[in-house]
Image 1 (cartoon, rainbow, N blue to C red):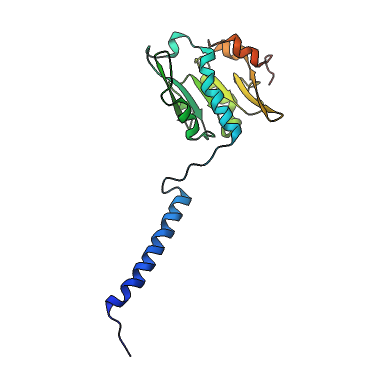
Image 2 (cartoon, helix red, strand yellow; image 1 turned 90 degrees about the vertical axis):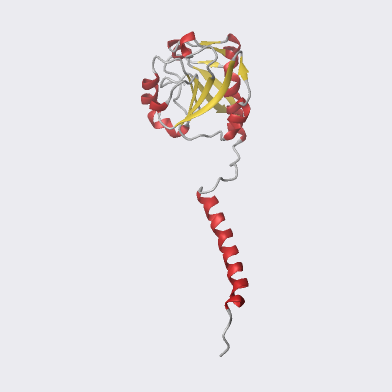
Length: 197
């Protein structure tokens, strides 16, 4: 019987190790253990992200909505984030007057702080009443895209009709939060009667 020297195994071990490492990296990527490739977001969510970014130009907050004169304008996302880095890229380097714009994510309504616009994700649709109760008296424009959002107390709903996004605004809820919405934005939206969506 011929015996193989340890050196004769090395090429096979190297090939096996290389193949195993490649498989391990693929598994880590698939399970989130390594930074994943950016998941593309839908065109509809891209349009909603642009709306969120542009809304700032049509709103006025009372002075007490900001801790300082140069505090950022914060667009928050509560729950699952449908925008990914797309929204971050939109606001990056942007300013309204002296205020920079930033995006923050929140997993619970109790964590929402220093926020001027809050997009409430579909993942939170089962607890809208609790969310709006927790935000009551705070100068935060609440935005969502689920049916019943405005009728339960949300301020601005993205409603998709005929492949287009329509704005529906609950002016009563916005006024209760001391927010002033520009007449230019109101002219583009459907103004909702209390309890309607």
